[in-house]
Length: 212
Length: 167
Image (cartoon, rainbow over all chains, first blue to last red):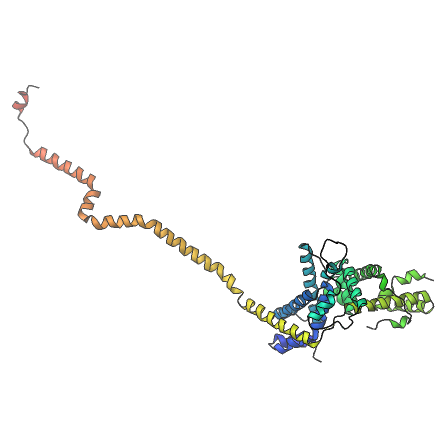
């Protein structure tokens, strides 16, 4: 398989299909990261596409001294952080899902349950695990995530959901590994406290550790 | 021997494979002899997996076709904008040239009545008359001189006549 870096080099030489291959290779991951960071399918589509546009227009600035995905994920995470900053400046709800499902303010209009699933349906695809418990989990997840700082959120998502090492995350966020670990373990502690109802037992032994 | 809570802080790092090999082995050794910690590690592992599942977004290929079509549309739009991004930059020098031209024309218009009257005057008044008018003072002085010459040439009264003058 052609490496990402080789595809980007081909694209820089004018091969448009190489860019298309990069998009196909990364579209799901880009969409996943932005969705998990922003909590909105529409924003995820806009921001992940913006990430690809940045790659397309700024391919020349990629010097090749890091992996393509490090560079691309940095673009995506920075776009998400900027987006969240702008939203918080505008005083809007940081995570739309949190706002939709929050019962804190009864004065606000609350969409009915199942909105997340309906969004999936409107887009012509159903959530593969479309169950009530899954909807509740997603709702609780986004609510818990919205209470983390954007950087903690980014670190947790990249580590837990996308299997990036703390070293890779440090390179993406341009920070030290120690800082990444601090963010990560604080995020886990906070999330476990807020999502304690999902903290169920099970006994398969320490061999059940995720393989890298 | 370390207590269980001294290990528990590192279970997440252990599951993520982030611990140095010596610490990794130490935890593994502890887990083999501690049911409570093994249970705790397993709970944490399940929790992490649940979070991953909760975030999972799986869309069919039609969605990605639409996604890429939209991306192509946005790219074409951005590319066009980038191609012509020099146009706004050109507006500044063009505006400067236009305002300089406008200023020049305004100044021309402001100065023109004066120049017009001067030219009209030059056109209607014959040159000789204009010269006379401009050198009027000199001419007056000249005529005075001429009159003095005439006075000198005219014979004056005789000595006798001057004496008989009653004054």
